Length: 222
Image 1 (tube, rainbow, N blue to C red):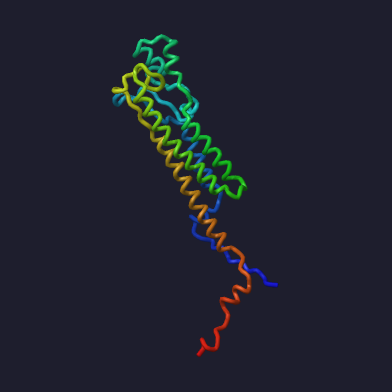
Image 2 (spheres, rainbow, N blue to C red; image 1 turned 90 degrees about the vertical axis):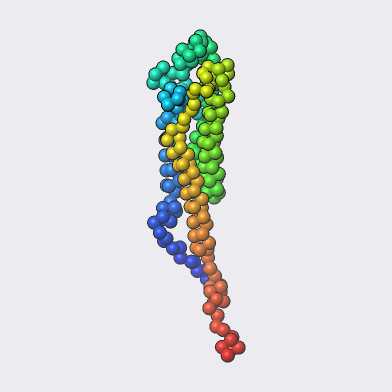
């Protein structure tokens, strides 16, 4: 009966040792999610910050906070002379689906990264890419809302002159997006490394080794 030999797996460089572990990708995703608690976007008039909201606040639909006016609702009341009821109706911000999707996809990716699912590497990659795309979608949605709502609309740009007001995304938003992209790249690199090592460590039968080192024929010696 043929015996089975196994190819040794090379230890590799420090970067390869880091990629083999399960920590880098989940840790990167956790860092990206932690930034959601910091200000993600600011509404500005010229160069002055009027109000800001965090990533979690955008996901939950909480009201934008202003250091000058207390809230965007107060600002709208002063600017447009709205009643309290009208201000509440126009500035009742709904949860931003892209922000919710980004958070949910990242949390799911963290869960799969720690699981023993055989397809976890592919699943984590796709979930991380979804989180990144949703993160970008949040930027597009907020800019569209501020530009198209207008004075008579509802939502982010309601009651203000959007020619004077603009939205600026903070360093925390962009850093969170970079971390999502970094997690995806790390997971793809980890997947390729583990796949390569599985091929190297695949069993080799002794008859295969004998065929490789078999002596040459008399004709070849001549």
